[in-house]
Structures are given as C-alpha cells and as structure tokens.
Length: 106
Image (tube, rainbow, N blue to C red):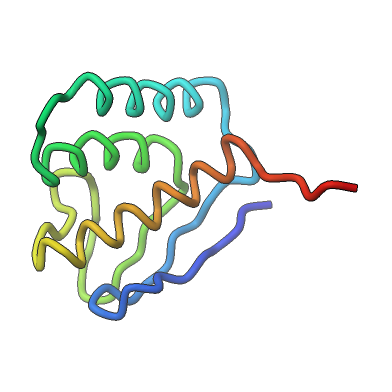
C-alpha cells in the first residue's frame, strides 16, 4: 500500500506517491545520490537538486503537480529556484524517512 503526501510548497501544489518500502535498487539510488552530492564540492543548488531528483524519481511511484504533465527529472520545474529547491528538499526528506525511519523510544 503506497502513501500519498501533499506538497507543502504553495507555488507547487500537488502530491507525491511513495512506496511503503524501498526496493534494493531504490535504496542504492538513494545512497548513490548522497555519495554524489558529497563528492560535489562547491556545487550550485541546481547541481545538488539534479542529483537528488534522480534518486527521487527512481524511488517514488508518481509526482503530480498542478499544471504539469509527465514530470521527470528533465521536465521538473526549476524556477522559481528557491521554491523548486524547497519542493525537492521536501521530497528527498520523505525518502530519507523511508530509508531510515525514526522509531520512537519505548
């Protein structure tokens, strides 16, 4: 059973459908994006976001943004730059919680 989350970025209303768990190839894509980002020294926000978008689209079931069709890493809205970066960070954080869920102390 997948989970649908709602974008908190008002400039980009829509939803993202997440799987319940990541598969091994998805976990690898997630880990690789972190390695690639760490290896990128003094990169621009856009360079980091391009790395994270590859992992996001390798892991999520769908991204639906109002006013956009067939969204992919190549067609993802890049401007306004600050709001696009906020949306990407929110999606990557959702993947981070799938990869390593926080379990409350008992």
